[in-house]
Image 1 (cartoon, rainbow, N blue to C red):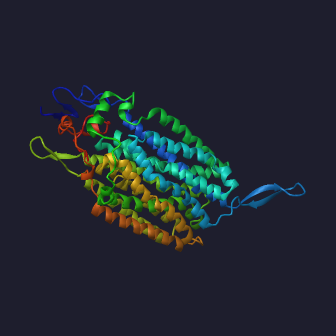
Image 2: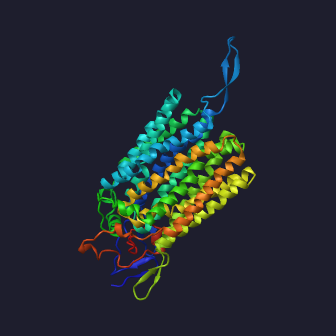
Length: 520
């Protein structure tokens, strides 16, 4: 029976599948949103999870400035008179600080593949995601006494934190492989990933305020407790797969299952084909290049703003957060825009429809355009003499990376959804190297706190953005790869949505209606 759409209502034999899970038709034939679908609740909680991931990761970037900055305190002299004395909690030079900030990534890089493998073998990554953040939160709580006791001990605690946070990104891709319908992947993933940047936006200025008012130790105590509270919430609400969630509606469950098609878990990844796949390397190279600029500024921007631009610690924290605020906002726009572009179709004659934008085209446009813009603004930041101009350029250089995250960061789910967590772990292993190399390299380049030395740091980041743009533009793909295809059972091959697509009203009301079959 041919389906027609009038005023946003799909008519197919007088019935619509899945309207009760997310929206309900009114008498006027239009839709209004009801309860938030469970997949979007999972995405919002993942947003808060990544908020904690980055709050726990970057707190030392601000705390280390307070820990090593001389400050005056009132003390009693031998005669009992109050006098002011200049003290410095830790006398660490710039190379030591750079190594300390990068030590987190020594552990982080070791558990990327392990996290992806565990998430694949266990059939889902929700519990693994929670455990990774929970243990990191506990270690954060014991950071102040460890730091006061020994510098090697602080190195160890940061490395172990990295080991547990290393499983978070691979495991969340396992969650999306079960929870995210194909044409909502960009939307759901970018909602979650934007929590990373909101966490950075909030934690940097708040950490500065805490350091000024309560002391640097309070940074670790407060953020550690917040992360543990989130862990309890996630563990109680989020399940590994939709069918394990007792609160999901039957309509939403059927929509997700029909959109994703048959799935298998625990299959062995075809490593040889993965390693020799150019679309995989396009994702890996792009992730590496994006992370180089991101981690360079994430760990060093507070120091640059304070020492080179001349702002005090409080303003340094706020100004350092601006790039990540821009990225968090742009991520929301880019995720919705990418899915909207992928959902647009035109008539191809009869009942057939053809996509206006291919998945490959959308991924390349978002990724390459973002990288080119980041290259331009990073180079401008190296040559603009004013503090306001430099901060503006760096804000745009980082913020526009939000468009790239609708390219490479969800591309794993396009080319091999059942191996998405493994591919994320594989790619993030290489993408973690900037977190190790960049802070240490910056510490050695910028020895005298001179603006001319910072130029070299920005040149390196801009050049890598350009390389990433070219490589992704040539080799990326949004098509399901041959080595990732699975044979569907005979009784499942004809399942799907019969060529139907969402109306705009359904798209923006989180429709549970099955959209055009694009299992890419």
